[in-house]
Image (cartoon, rainbow, N blue to C red):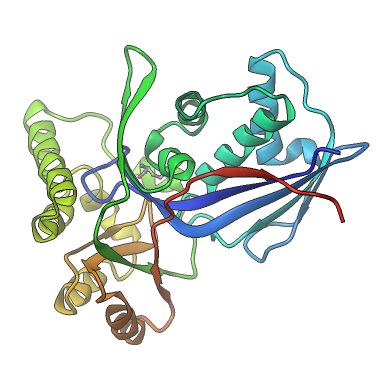
Length: 302
Ligand code: HSE
């Protein structure tokens, strides 16, 4: 019997001006327990997941099936128990984690032996941008560039950032599709130059450990935050209060509505406590960076 578990972390994407490029894996997880079975069955066991549906309609199955067919392979039937502590449509990469889980499911069942770079290329193709799927696959902090000419994803990865992360998770959803609709389709050369300069300095600040500089640049984003701010209740209040409590900078996590502060190491719990008072209807949490990324582990049936 081939029984295995697939674990994929949540992620925060963009980090302000790193729009569609930068992301970080978080210690919240989507987990699949997979057992060989005589027919396909998906069972969900989490308050964050909708009730199970026909296996063929399940998003993770559909990704696995698409990938298997790209390699001319067939998925052997399994019973899959899905658990998750990643809330849906909050900007914590739940869809990217599902894409990565589907890729790993096909990789295991069809023995595709895909390396990480190949998984990243497929995941980017399925998801549309690499900023959530890359950290979900690799763990850590990752900056990516999906180069159109080659269809390849170039990236830089590290887990050396010395910051605390505080997340403000509201109890309402915002679909990425909705949050992308408010963005402009085209940009002038002058706007692009200004926006990418801010992004470049933000990444340089993060990598070199100049977090004050990185924080200022995070909050100066021109790519997406100015357009999305009005979709996110408490946007200005969260940035302002977190800064007053010592955060380097606060940005929309992915497409929102969750926001995330980057704060001096050790200051996260106090900021979270203070911010929870300011935001009684939110779940305010300090989260860690997941450094391992997606993984598959076989297990023995008892
Ligand atoms: N970069 C994406 C966005 C992340 O902001 O729309 C959410 O999928």
